[in-house]
Image (tube, rainbow, N blue to C red; front, side, top):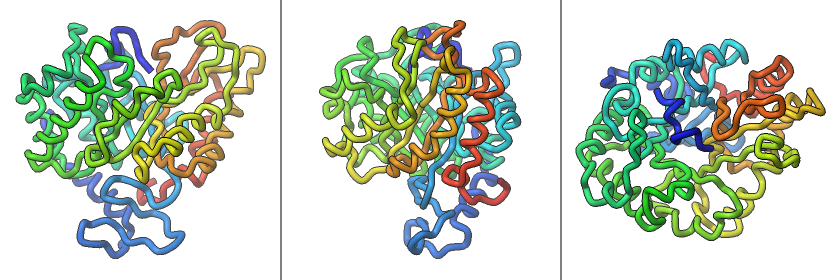
Length: 357
């Protein structure tokens, strides 16, 4: 879901040792025997393991993008304040970064993210080919031509130096980026970035291909897919916009998740790969004040019904919508919604059995 000159309003370092997250990842394995690549060998029904590509052995990760208060620009508090409200730590923290290779926008992981990783969270860096501060949009052709290789290599080195697995996405929702180039240019740019990371010895980047998952773009997704060797997770962004977009239709969690999930099954894109809701969200129903709470309470069951989804990240921001008397996409806009979201986070399906939780 897009926000204004894309995510300028939500944007916001060299990496130190991330020993806290490394210890957390070991606790995920929970002293289980591992194979040559360090991935756990789990018996039937065993929970608490995680693969080298960050796939939990059962259940799903619970994640959060939360916009930063512009009065403080404290990106850490953007997450910890919500964690205090819901009574748990998120497994994944989602942040958006640009190609400036400078400051908190482009020189990531930043100090806030370093701390979040030390405290046991997994980072998901959504990397966009634009410059947030100026609104400049870069082209995929320039990326795959090598024009920005210095930036790519600098980010690759910081990711490699982190020494722990992180999720990394390149230009999420590319079908909504006409100024950046053609679908073929996107694929070439993705592969170019991936290849440079590989050449730099970056083995801890877990690559997440994220699209909108909208039926109006189904005909384009095969041409936007970089290929199985370049993608580790397949992700999309389902929303129950309800009145926010002028459509009175209320969609349940399963009705938002299900259509693209089934389309992927039917068309074989990313077959066998774990799936992620890289962004998801819901509006409230002005005619039914408890509808949003019920929506959140129903969410874990919807994930169980779609077992290939192994991570779900709430997008706690208005995004492309405006907050009005009938539209608010944040999960904590009232006590009932917050209670429902907290209840979802307590569900065993979203409680990975990690130490320190």
